[in-house]
Each structure stands twice: as C-alpha cells, then as structure tokens.
Image 1 (cartoon, rainbow, N blue to C red):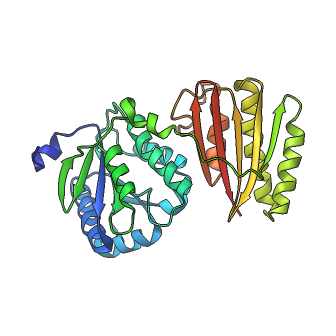
Image 2 (cartoon, rainbow, N blue to C red):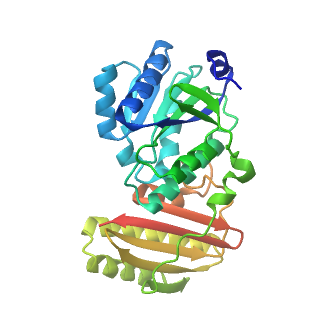
Image 3 (cartoon, helix red, strand yellow):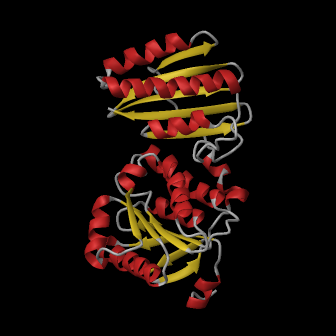
Length: 317
C-alpha cells in the first residue's frame, strides 16, 4: 500500500500513528510539519511532550493560535492519566472539527515500570477511541537514536500507522487491541523483594494497615503531606478489595531506590481494561476508587484476570 496524501485523507475516526524519528532535528522537522498542517486546516492541536521538547518546537513554529501544550513529563509520569487528558481535549474542541495531537509517553531514561505502563497505555488508547465518531489523529514520537529496539518494536505493534522520514505507512506488525494487544500486557508484575512487608487483611483491619503505612513512610522520610496521600491511596485500594475482591486481600509494602512501592492483591476481577483511566460518570455508581488512586500516585500498575487482581502503586521519595 503506497503512502499518499489520498491514503492519509481516506483514514477516518481514530488514527494512531508511531512517529519514528532520529534525534532532535528529525523530531522537529516532523513535529513542526504535523502542527503547521493542522493549524492550516483549522484543526485544534494539543502537543503533549516534555517541556524542553515544547520549547524547541516553539522556536521552530512560534506561538500559534489553536495549539495547546501539556508537559508530558508531569502528565505522563503516571501514564494512566493521559487518556483522560485526551478526552478533555476532544470535549473542548468544536463538535465537528477534526483534531490532532502529539503525545510522547516513552522516552530514554524512564524506569522499566514506567515503560511497561506507557506501552500498556499505547494499547489502551486503541480501546478508548475505537469506533469514535471524531476524526482524531494522534502522533506518538519514538526516538530510535536513544530507545532500545524492543521499545520501537512495541510501538509498531500498538500503532496501526507508522511515519518515518516523512513517509506514512500501515504498520505490518500492528496487533488490534481486541485480538492480542491486551493479552500480552497482562503478564504478571515482577515479584516484590522477599524482605517486603506482607500483611493479609480482612474486615476490621484497615486502621492497622493505615498505621503500618504511616510508620513505613516515616522510616523512608516521606514528607507528612505525601504520607497522608499514600495512606489515602492504599485505603482506597484495600477498601475496594473488601467490597469487590472477595472480602479480604494482601498488602505488600517495600522501599526501593527513590520510591516507596505498595501492592494490594485480592481475588476479584477488574473486567474493564480502562478502569481508573476514564473519569467516573456522576450518574454511575462505582469506579471512583481506582480513578482516585491514578490521580494520587506517581505510577499505577494494574494486572487483573478472573480470580486474581494486583494493583501496584509507586510513590517518589
């Protein structure tokens, strides 16, 4: 299939494209063209990249009406917060207008856990916007000069389209999310260290768990305000276990370089892969606990199969 302007114009709905670039100059050429083409077509544009990338892009295209920016280093620290940001952007755009965005969730220097969740996010984007009646073109940059080849390979699997050196083509290795895309991302999380705190809990134990978390945070010198937020997040997860996870669960808690990590396990099943990544509907009960946890924590990892759910949260020290 030859990549032509006609091919691009024939794509409607959600177009999820991996932009494979090599270094700053290549990024700026491709990103600037994408933004200016959108502005020329009267399309609202949101650029979600690191602050340094945004400053470089501004030097190339200048301040342009209709172009918004959000710092991906802040928003995307927990990739679970990115889809709601795109939802909000679309909701604020004129109803009939095509929209486009740039979102770079994977960059050199991210931790393995952050990369896992960013890759999961890329697959979940396809689920979140499948069948949308909006023309939404999302360009996701990947720096082939600084990222491992396996990250680039994953990008090709999660994006239906790939652009490289200005040429747009369908990805030959794309996996639709409803076929195999999510299954391969449900692999178990790495095992916690043997030295972690491991407490089984049931009804009546939550106060003791909150005390344990507070003491552990104090040992790690987590500031008081951050400790209160951590306690609140773990209280939400353990309460969910009691209500929806079989009435009991296990809390694992440990410290690793630069962060405190907690994991709550139970025998429940979260059937909606977008749980916690969609703003709770005010008229629909439930769903608020996991949403709150995503807003509170620096990183959230969810793995759920029938009869077994694990939610791991990371808190920077």
